[in-house]
Length: 238
Image 1: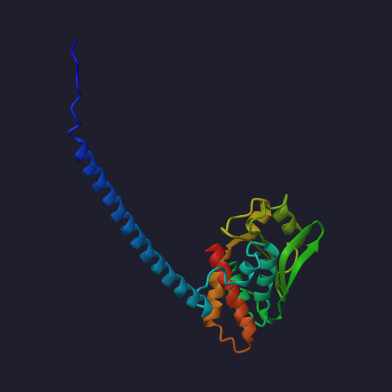
Image 2 (image 1 turned 30 degrees about the horizontal axis):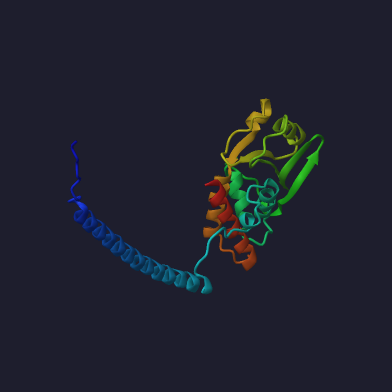
C-alpha cells in the first residue's frame, strides 16, 4: 500500500505578497482619487462662484432679444403685415417718411408715382371674395400685398385678389414670402402682375432705411421699434 503525502504549497508566501501589494496599490489609487475629486470640487466651486457673479451683475444672458420672438410670434403673418404697413406709412413714427415705400415700389417698377407722402396703408382690405393682407393707397397708387410666412395660399387666392383690385388706378401686386417665390395661385394676368418679394428683401430695405434716413422726425421709440423688427427679420429670414 502506497501513501502519498502532499508537500506544503511553496507559492503561498508569494501569493500573500502579491495580495499585500495589490491592496497597497488600491489604497494609493483611492487616495489619489479622493485628492482628485477634491481638486475637481474646488474648481467647480470656483466656476460656480464666477457664474453667480456674472448672473448677479447681468453679464450671464441668453435667449431672444427681439420683441416678436420673445412673444413667440415671429412667424405669425398678421404681426408681420401690421409692422410692414407701419413701415410703409409715410407718417409713421419711424421717421422714414415715404422713403421705405419708395424703395419697395422701385423693386416693382422703375417709376414710383409722385405724392407718395399722401399714401396711406390699410390692413385686411376685403373686396368681393378676396381679402388683401396690406393695401397702400394714394394718388396714382394702389399697392396690394399678399403676405405668406408658413401658411399655404388659399384656393385661387392671387387670382381672386387680381380680379378684385386690378381695375384700381395704379394697381400693383406683391407676393411676399420667406423665399421670394412666385405665387402658385396666380394664373393669366395675375401671374404677370404679382411681383415676388422675400422677407430678406424687406430686411435689406429696412437696413438701408435705418442707415440712410436722418430720422429727424422719428421718435426714439419709433426708431427702436424699426430696429427691433429688423432683428426679427434677420433672425428668421436671412
